[in-house]
Image (cartoon, rainbow, N blue to C red; front, side):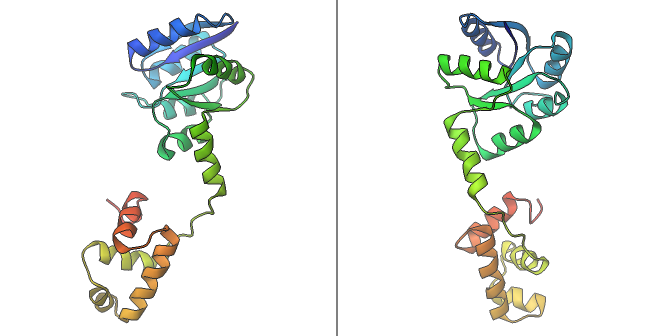
Length: 205
């Protein structure tokens, strides 16, 4: 039997998964948890083969719990509603064996649990596509200090002329810096550049 712990902050979801997994024949649910901290405690107590881990939970989240479980032989299979880069990548980097979204069909979930128990990677199609895109995407070249200065001034509403005056450089040089910024951030205009820079934490809060 494959021994499984279910981690989700919604009791209805846990009940549904417990009932569903009961029909697999070779899977036994040996524990449940409502958050990451409880999950770690339960795993330490029952030593399951697989943990079905939600990510967004109150208190200790799923990614933090996955990191804390890294030293255990237990395999963590993420089962969540979200498949954005900001959810997928941290979970995989933290040590998750697989990543599924909650609309995964019943039979596919059974197969995923069995594969995870063997240590095999399991990914929903949408997640696999995202990860493949990350691999294919060239590493972003960092902005230079001067480019960050220029973009910071633009973010505060300065025109190219204003930025040039404040930095004691020519307006043409400001335009050149912005062209380089657009290329590095993969955008086409200053509004998008500012938005992406804030998103990536390049311009602070």
